[in-house]
Length: 115
Figure 1: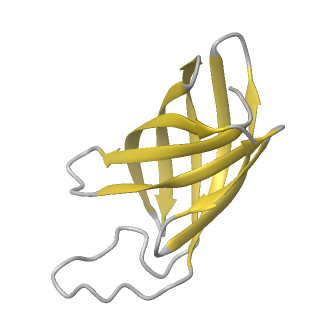
Figure 2: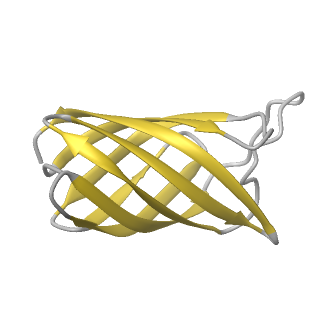
């Protein structure tokens, strides 16, 4: 997993309807990033074409759209993930603890710029 700025596109699993997109900076085992409503910070380790980590997500701006409810809305959410990477892209599978509920997801990442 190369250091740099990555786009991330998340699709919720297990019957949860939800998607998210944002940007994350990966640098020497540290993750920082977010989107218009949430920010995240965490850490990761890298193996031979594999990686895993954990991230904590918090809301920074209220969600004003009336017909949609963010899955993570108003909560600090802890997430564990693992996946694979090659060249300038990566895929992960993860599970987030939202209150007392576990929510699984898949995500794809694409490197946009060097760090």
